[in-house]
Amino acid sequence: MAYPRYFFPQAAILVLCFTVPAVAQTSRGAITGIVHDQQSAVIAGAAVDLTNQATNVTRSTTANELGFFRFDAVDLGDYSVTVRQAGFQTFIKRAIPVLANQTVTLDLSLEIGETSTTIEVVAETEAALQFETPVRGGNYQADAIRELPLPARNPVSWL
Image (tube, rainbow, N blue to C red; front, side):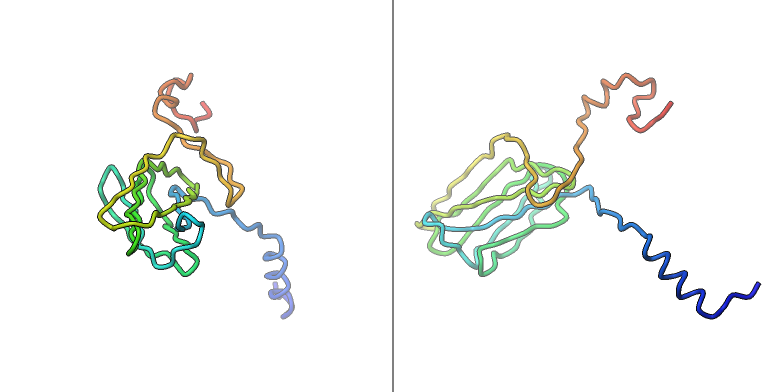
């Protein structure tokens, strides 16, 4: 069967019009934040280290001219963030939980002082609120899976 020459471009446009864009989901999280001093002035160029507490793997970045930093594609788990800048005390925040498809936002305030002094903050277990993107989802704990009333204990099984 022969098609007219104009059929294929119109068909392609029609297919593209009805294609629904997929929303990206990931099994990793992100950590972002702003580094500032006690008077809320941003600190540009601060060295920020992100360390996985289970594996001791460290990633590093530098705060930009607005004091902003970001770590993308962060594996799930608990992390610590260390911030260093000349003329300020070293700041450490521990026990930061990273969950799937969620962004943790930190507001880090450095105190003026010698770099030999370290301020360490242990994160409290607070409700993880997602402000950046409207995301539905969650993480299953091992206990929840074990307590499923299914014969195979498979949450995606229809049998």
